[in-house]
Length: 319
Ligand SMILES: [Fe+2]
Image (cartoon, rainbow, N blue to C red; front, side):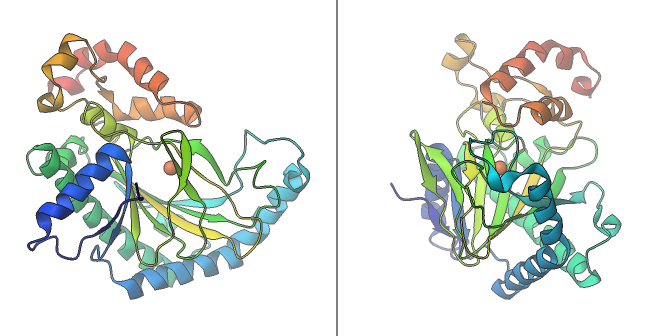
């Protein structure tokens, strides 16, 4: 099976059923897919890439090299399990933007990243509605499920993975599943490195010019009661070259959103066997995830199950 690459160009035309089918198959079998002709202009993405790479060179590269030297990462001889070979910063867009507070971003870069966020937010909501259609959920169901009192949480992690002398010993980013809802990744069009775990083997997510990679987070696994699953992925840094850029945008529930399986997706058989995912406040899940990101997700779901009753008795569940 080939990694799913889906062209959205004729989504509103005669190809809609086949596009929806491809997305359904990708959600059920991969937890990942890559979209082309998603409506974000190629020239705009080129500009985002150019400014991100410029910013890394000007403001981040030296800091990264100093950190590597301080931690002695160039000279490791055994596998490193507590640190990643990546240089990052985080732009929060919703509910309240932090872009104005980031001191070393140029005004041009700030303005472009604000536009980038609003374009990706729209794309995320379009994709969520396509998922609703495939799941026979009402339009807007997933967006509403993420809403909480203040709307979704939306942010972009800007990452660079510089050349790494020991990629077998230090991962660019250690294997994990994403905690949130739906994740949209704009990645380097030349340098590969992102891999997902499929049937026990690591599979490359191919770099593709102007594409957006989409993946399912833990919250969609809960809401679909496991019909769609978040999938382990990692970044392997390259030993040589220019390094890899990636911008991962997380469309997540609001902090007080109560997450639980959509009742129409809990089959009778699953209910009888008590194979139902837990109900919890998203913020509580994130507190747990913060310490356990690089561990398996199942114990996280189990821990939230143990707290299930608190949510049912809590004030948020009654509104
Ligand atoms: Fe991730």
